[in-house]
Amino acid sequence: MNTIFASRGLATFALATLPLAIQAAEPQLESPAEATAEATSLNPMVITAALAPRTADETLASVTVLDEATLRRQDPASLPDLLRGQPGVDVTSNGSFGKSSSVSIRGTSNSQSLLMIDGIRLRSATLGGPAWQFLDPRMFERAEIVRGPRGSLYGADAVGGVVQLSTPEGEEGAPQPRVSVGGGSFNTQRYSASLSGGSGGTSYYVAGSRFDTDGTPVRRGGEDKGYDNTSGLVRLSHAFESGAEVGALALRARGNTEFDSFGAPAETDFVQQVSGVYGEIPVSDTWRSRLTLSEARDESDTLDAFGFSVFDTQTRTARWENTLGFGVHELVAGAEYSEDSISSTNVYDETNRDNTAVFAQGLLDFSPVAVQASLRYDDNQAFGEEVTGSLALGYEFDAHHTLRASVGTAFRAPSFNELYFPGFSNPDLNAETSETYELGVRGQYRTLFWDLAAYQSDIDELIINVDTTGDGWVDTPQNVAKARIRGIELATGAEIDDWTLAAALTWTDPENRSGLNAGNRIQRRASQSARFDVDRALGDWTLGASWILQGYRYEDAANTDRLNGFGLVNLRAGWDFAPMWSARLTVENALDKEYETARDYINAGRAAFVSVHFGQ
Image (cartoon, rainbow, N blue to C red):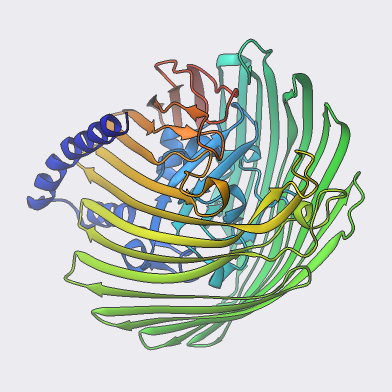
């Protein structure tokens, strides 16, 4: 099946990109505005990769940007649905609609992938990873996926990569309302509304959304498991004539999800929240300084087969960042202080820890050679000191082709559960550490881009649960495991006439390197995946489809329990039927494929949703 999957994917990719390459080579007449729009879409500005604005071909990193137009066209029901099949990204879910989901970037774990919202880190300090399933995609206008280690810029957990979600900003002008009402399969209802505008240097964006569904069974023969989510967003900023700027952000999602706990009904009330204020001043013509104070909360109240439990975590952060220009060169330097705290029905040995860090990065341009070098020092109260660094070199062969090579280190912080959970913890754990090498090349043209990257990550001190008493039960986490992850990623996209096309092929070899399972694939990781997105504008109509392919994976570390691969087809259509008015239809899993990414947890079958929208 491996060979069949690979040959079909490569053949499809070749057929899809051949006419694009021919078309890109032909001269086309278009307005300067159209040319600028195409260039911005195919070579977007990225901030996450280097802490400074750089176009995708200048980042010297493997990046994918899902812009506002993409999010509106696809209109995904959940964030995991949006990320599934993107280059280097794998998603595992225990069912659909608000059920526990893990995002793996380049074969790493959910807790080795960093999630940020407008620069604010969001995760569960007890579990160690973010709850992707509880965030409504309609609250965001952009997603940046940076693959590869970013520990030297963001500290702990950025081993596989970083996903940064951006909320909309208001613009100068009269208030602009936007309203959406829709629903569909499984008695799903979906509403959202926003108001944005600005005047006199002050801009604002206020939004709210509601998602409510009866859901579907998460196990064969089970009952429907519902989910609801109410989200609110406020974003304000003011720019002074001096060039200084201040702003504030508050995003909160609250709701309930039902699931199955050892055959018994269970449910969780959750809260996901980020808030922050910032101030930025131009100290001089070449020096800008920014201070951000933020707070993130991950809260859950759960009733399951074990009883009632509360796990509330809070992270408060102060980050000072300075950008200095030296002609064509830039230096970014700063310091960060953060404190994690928890409140739980379980009695933890420790309920808070702090982390102090300093970091610096040089962005040097010796055209046609570019150099990016960064270094960060972290001092954590719980697990000690960590130093991470990275070095990336880029070479422009010509105006269209850039070669890059990089090496970077990162680490994952042990979670509160691993360090302090009563009866199941090890306060002497070290942080997991990694070293990654990458070689990539990018072709950037007016109507087409492609990006090819190969990498290897060596991860040491992996934390696994060990049976220390010999009673057959794992009871203590220890630093004993190693992993080696190799991979190749190919991504391409094009905008030609009324067509918008994107394709991604991913091959990953995430291998255990120690213990009885040495040489086996890390469980719940697909080694092959592909994604193809096609959209066409036809006057007032837009039609589109996504085809997502995933290879097989193993449920267990021994690689004896195999989960079959699958293919999903998603369809969509949009109609601008009046000024400011539009309607959308999406059909998820149009072929009604039954599939699972975790043993005995099935995902939703065919689902259709219709919505009506007012506003630009």
